[in-house]
Image (cartoon, rainbow over all chains, first blue to last red; front, side, top):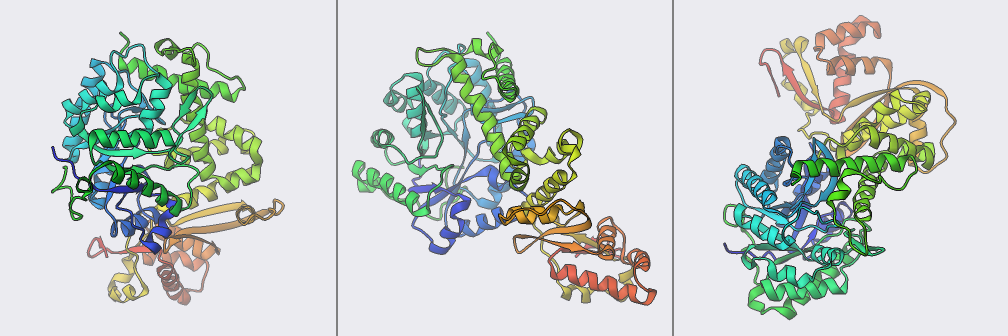
Length: 291
Length: 276
């Protein structure tokens, strides 16, 4: 599997629509939250189309519920596929989690027990989704706050094994590794070194908040220094990986996020040889890329 | 070993149970089944760890309701709105993968449960906000213009049917709820509650949600055409509002108005059995 490098992207947020259209900032690509555009029409889709005309995009979902024991939601999958037809994303990602059971949605990314039965269950469902969408998925690691007694392995072993069996990619969230390492008392570098290098397609960076002894994945702060340090280590380990910054709350002016993205770019330039950071062909589409 | 499904059902019960007990003022859903499956550590018990999810669940749903019903929140105040949100979250678990649709049954709750059912303007304000929420991202269509009227052959007019944009909605208010909504939206003091009897048209034009009051004749015309009446049936019904010789021109005038307001997506000619 070859890994295309898109460069450095930002999450597309409604607060920044007009700024992006007016100023055409030098962002390599945008990541959209798929569910925000799984609507019949109106402004969201209008802005999406206009911005897509100028920028590459990837799609990132929060409601696939790939780990649920409910049947896969065919209506959701159909809408996801329709959106992908519209957006022509470089790739589609979602989380290694479950969000719903008995048709009730938690609207949260809930963790799974890390054991063989769950691996088998999730890998099979990823295969079904990949068959339906006609492309490989990226599966992202979570921030989590609980460990099940039923878990029999580390999270990175669990993620690796699912990615191998489903032949999917990994979206590695560096902040989530930091958060979960703190909450579950493991070394974040062990996680990074435990993931198959050739499976990682994208990095996420984000901020978080402290709540007593726990760290909560709030996406409402700047990326903190320890996460930047971990990002540099991840680049050393994996090489050039398309990187984006997630900001979902307390959203600042676009320029502030853009500056933060430049920090990510500078760390990559300082860490990797220039040749490694050559962007993949800008006209790459799903049929030519990772699908 | 407990199955994955059992774990997930227990976890979801904890989220729901936590929600209802918080509504009654207690801090934890102590002793829920999922706790025994979660590891405690010296810095955080299993209960404490699960609480992060339960509290987050409730906060996310409340944020979604607050976003959708900002004006209602402003009108009834924090305490009653919080009571409303607690009731709604407990009674209407989210059944849609997108939070965008979580609050879609709020009017149903307001219309059936005390104390809200005793305050009709509360229900009307909620209906107004619900209608605007729908118009915001209702399905797109290529709207027709007045020039398209010339494509209708004379013999086709009697059986002409009209397809409206999905954002087009009519809302009848028995109180001055729209004035209250407008005042709160503009961050002004709302007027005192008064009886009213107005039907409002809400729709989207150029990506912006619009609204205006309708007189009885236009309300009738729009209602009948939206229900599937054809042009001839409309003209017949308009006899209750206009003199006979004026009804066709008045019906055409309405059509022109709606076309200019980008409310019309298609004309159905019975001879062709298809819209254009």
